Amino acid sequence: QDLQLLMEYHDNKTFEIVAANEPYIRKVAEFGIFITKEDFLGKSAGYFCSEILHLKPDLVQATLDNYHKVIETKQQMKFVESIQIEDIIYHADITLTPIINAEDGKSYVFYNSHDISKVMEAMKLLQESEQRFALAVQASNAGIWDWNDINQDNFWVSDRIYEILGYKPGEVEVLFSKWKHWIHPHDSKKVRKLLSKYLKSESP
Image (cartoon, rainbow, N blue to C red; front, side, top):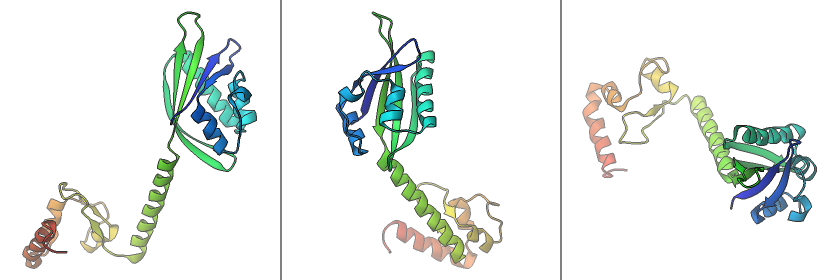
């Protein structure tokens, strides 16, 4: 569930936390910071970020700068943020929304944070996996190609494939329709037949 805070803007350019939802309290507890709403409601956002969450000064300042920008521009702001609290890194998709009370003219910033830590971690693992694969391909000096989507004309080849065919890496456009013409004439008919059977799931 999304984490939410409501902060009132004051003339002295500070933001007072006036509301928070329960998921926010529970998330903070996951970082080993056990507080109740009463512990920070009425406190300034700067105090909460630095003295309770113990964020680094530059991150505290960047956070407050974003709040001020939302108030000044009266425009919603969306961004992805990664912060470290204690030994845990929290990745979040954040939305800051300005709210103006029509009755008394008071200004607020509504903070909504969606946890994307698992998504970011999965992306990191995928990137590491792809880097390892690239190193393995380079070390093996093998010519490798991958036609991932048979409904598309383009496919991927390793740099070694170019060299085997007498090209420099990236010298020719990698299209399946062109690849068919690269096959030796004596092999073309056989290769096309085998590929056709494979695509029809008639062979392994």
